[in-house]
Image 1 (cartoon, protein in one colour):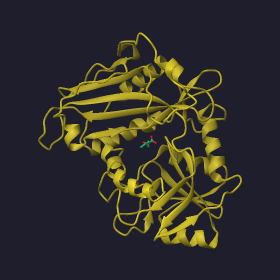
Image 2 (spheres, protein in one colour):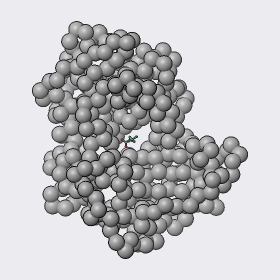
Image 3 (cartoon, rainbow, N blue to C red):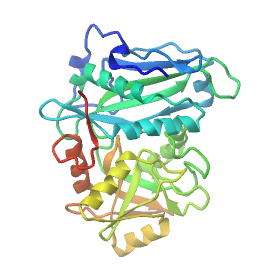
Image 4 (cartoon, rainbow, N blue to C red):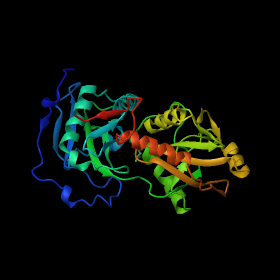
Length: 356
Ligand code: COI
């Protein structure tokens, strides 16, 4: 693979910007896109010249394998701006490593690190005005890879497109979230693709999540497929439980996404002296803790969701409400992480990556 520098990306700049048509105070998650996008095609066994062009529709043959077999993986990351106008990414190498881990599981080629980081840096410099300062504002970044080969035999493609598109964002969930604990449907299984950000993992959740929404719950906390007794993740976020003063979350496995916000929460909690336990969590212990009052909080953690407190869960036809508590771990940890991301606090673990 030849090493490229930023200047070797083919760039076509948009002649006008759409930014003045956007109301940044009233954004629906993932519906507005910045002026430019990055892409790079894999052909003849190697990644070709990367390009940045105005954000636009593209032409793909209807026979492209992505449409038939879902050979597609993605990432979610964010850029933040401080009050001096400096732009930062948060742990971008972790996203780079994870997209390649996901790609490998779906028999897709590895994307070179220089292309990923140069592509991101150049794109963010061009669309810097779309990153607004202030905690709660960010630019959501969606790198993804799709199988483009026009062929419908059920085998991996020999051509792919890697792309990055960006969308200004506020929080994914604006209110507290009510969840169902899964009792029938499953998100992932041992030896499957649950750990990967494979597009199909998300599509498979839409139907059971629709059913949950009809009952007044926004999300499902998935349980292990074989017994439905162990609480795993919520699909758009990893899940934390506060039992008395201990923060507990499930260990990652081939069924659970190795969330970057998840591991940041664990680290920040430990830095703050909070007892943390990474272990399997059972439905029965959480129900018991809700009944005896030792369950103080449940919250989700993810790039889009940031930290989302959960106000109630349902299992076995019974709803368990959680108390509203002052200085919740969710609030304290969210503030710590946002302060690091927005360059308002010391970055002792080297998580911030400045775009220069
Ligand atoms: C993210 O947090 O980046 C995710 O991938 C969740 C997404 C489905 C909105």
